[in-house]
Length: 45
Image (cartoon, rainbow, N blue to C red):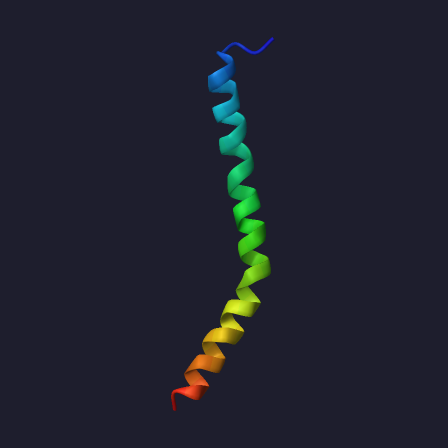
């Protein structure tokens, strides 16, 4: 049994899952963003 309400339990679960997922997505996106920035910088010279 969980010692808090269902709503509070869902919030706590959501808070614990979201940050790692966002970090994982960001780590996959980072090389593409860096490449796009480098391409844009090279094109503006």
